[in-house]
Amino acid sequence: MTERPLSGIRVLDLTNVLAGPYCSYHLMLLGAEVVKIEQPGRGDLARALGPDPELNRAGIGASFLAQNAGKKSLVLDLKDPDDRTDFEELVRGADVLLDNFRAGVLTRMGYGAEVLDELNPRLVSCAITGFGQSGPMSSAPAYDQIIQGLSGMMSITGTTDTAPLRVGFPVCDSLGGLGAALAISAALLGRERTGRGARLDVSMLEVSLSAMGWAVSNHLISGVDPEPMGDQNATAAPSGTFETADGGLNIAANRQEQFVTLCRLTGLPQLVDDPRFAERESRKLHRAELNAELNAALGHRTALEWEETLSAAGVPAARVLTVPEAVQLEQLQHRGFFTHLPYPDGSPRTFRASGNGVLVDGEPLPATSAPPLLGQHDAERAGIITRWRARSRTAGATGS
Image 1 (cartoon, one colour):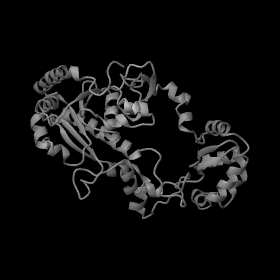
Image 2 (image 1 turned 180 degrees about the vertical axis):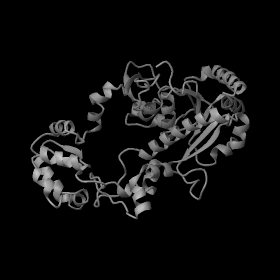
Image 3 (image 1 turned 90 degrees about the vertical axis):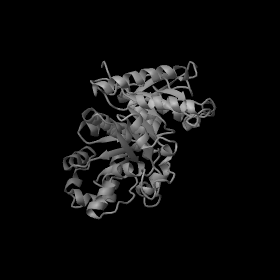
Image 4 (image 1 turned 135 degrees about the horizontal axis):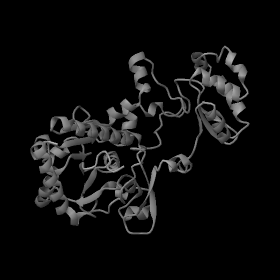
């Protein structure tokens, strides 16, 4: 691969912590040049987040390292006139401006839509907030857990005894970042047709509800309210987590032929003709009895043995792994999902950075360099501005 899909795209990133940095990390993996604008003395709040206090004190917390490889860091105080001048020059040369301030903050800083359009009519500006830039909740603060609760996501996570439960990772932040990256990519493509940029307003609440899929659509379309079902899949049976001789095994025998095969391989062929289990809907009604039969049969072999046997026969099945086990999967190594990167402080240690799960022309898109120290590229500020502005003038002249 000679060039990544977003090669030549310049992203000015004003974001902190996760949703915004996750968005710009994906744009970087796809080839964009990302310049983080950070506050003097503090920078991205994620620099002090993570389980290692030493890294946090050094301003390279694990949470920061995970989402900021391949980016540049400039320290700008947007209350300082000279820094504002440099920032505006960067805006003039940028393709994308990304922020995750509360609604209205960028406007109060003097960079509302009209000002940005005057500085750079080709700019794609994208704001990621909890609730969007308008509406009665637009000014409310929001973190991932707030969105998980308001979206209904927590109400269907866990069992009837344990719900509501928080999903075990910041899924709404991640969804907000991915939704923004998708919208930005589409807006950049649209700009090639119109010659003008766009103003993108991404609501984490709305993106999360959209991603919840059937849990929402079953209610809206069929009037069926979702319920927490723990490790079971409401749409089919047997579909969920089962017990083997040494741990959990996920099975999704959602089609009739998969159910028949599962019964044969587990030594339970009689279940196929049992009126309780003969059809998809009856299996859902008698899920508990069916699961009990399968758990008893599956307990005679290990999860890995069943995974290999069932998968080979076309029945979707896989072990339930811990995170440390999952990141060691040979499949991930084969596809080059992780990249070994140096720590930005010059130490000899390395860490693994995740990719985006996409191969382009058969090749993965690894992170291109270590995450930056705070203000690491300040000495290059003038050069970055000159380079970006020169290229923006060329683009404006050609209409490209």
